[in-house]
Image (spheres, rainbow, N blue to C red):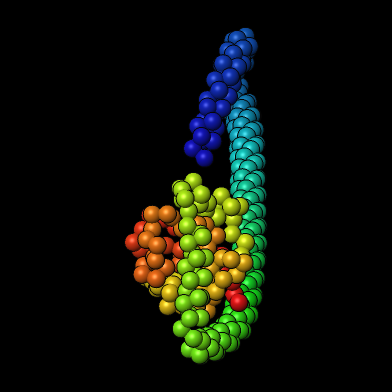
Length: 331
């Protein structure tokens, strides 16, 4: 409004500046025209006064009309300015509305983006959850598979153990049956031995001397001339293929800790070779006995039987460096 007042004042000054010179010129012309008629005017002072008053009124009216026109122009300019201000205000309002609309659109877009980001995060979380669940399921499946494999392994181990136990039980039954057979054989042998002893007791002293002579002759015939060159171990003979003593019997009667003398046990001649009995089995020498052993070693020396290098051997404690290969017979 202050700017409007300044503009109105400026327009008024410009208007007055334009009208005052014209008014002065008009007044000068009137004075020039009034000189010739000065006398008439002097003659008629009342009429001139009336004309002057009328001219002044017309001039005042004209000035009023100019002032009115100027005011109308100012009002028009002010109205134009008001309309322009209103238009500017409306434009500013429209601009604010547009800005608000844009801001609202941006907010909506931001909200939409946030919702999309939220939805994307939720989808990612869902995918992660699904992936985690899948990994957990795979882990559980692997654990279940491992558990089944372990159970199958344990079941297989139990089956193998049961089979082993069954085999052991079967072997134990077989061993028991064998032991019973051996025991029966031993009893039979003991019975036979008793019978032989009884028979030997009934034999005459001459018969006993005859048997001793035969045994001595048989042992003498098996004496080596050069034992180092004449004897061979079972490896050199191609391996032992005869009867094998059961483990329980072997540990009970054989080995270095179980020494005996041959003369205290039955001796028989089979095919001209001496065969002695010990521990429920019969033994026959395959090798000759060393020539440097005493002639009656089988009566006086402590001997023992052991299994070594895949075969049975007879050892003499008086000559521990020597061993004689022997064969085992169950009957």
